[in-house]
Image 1: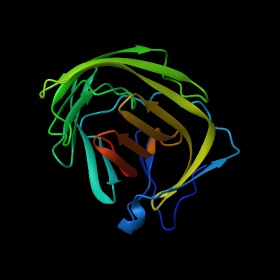
Image 2: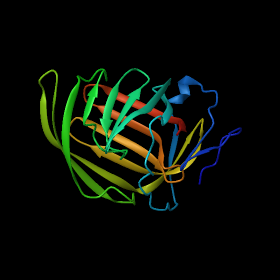
Image 3: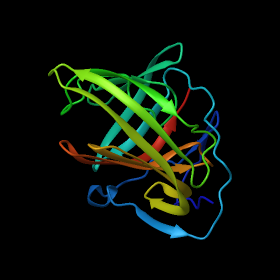
Length: 212
């Protein structure tokens, strides 16, 4: 159960409950406190459909960041980050991007994937896999699998913006490890990490979700 920081103003928009933005010590912003706990969480269903304009405010490697849903075309959603990076994927929080541009240090590219298994609802121990193939503007091609698993343990994540009980989802392939700490209460990640063989590590802490 989430135990808000003091003071916190709860924001309830659509199905998303978010924490108020508080002053942050940037040196601490990339270091949430994460601990395994003995608890149970209800299965997390796929979040309800998002609308354009939905914005996720975050601390990204200790700096202010954002990710905004700027367009929807059928099942394809296009997002734009604070640094101009644009990418498209479906609404699942874990599926690979189908195209991306201006996402330094990655070259612009496109890819397709096939999903093996079911993602939702998230429950302890669930597994699924993406078989991915793609091409970037540098002429590099790839064809490999990404395996995802929901940890059997429950994790309590505490940041400057609140405290949540979460499920840990990790997706790995030969170049990248991605980890999400998912809160069923707010229907979103509250902390996520990416560790890429070339780009290095990235850490993002949820500040607020603003939804239309």
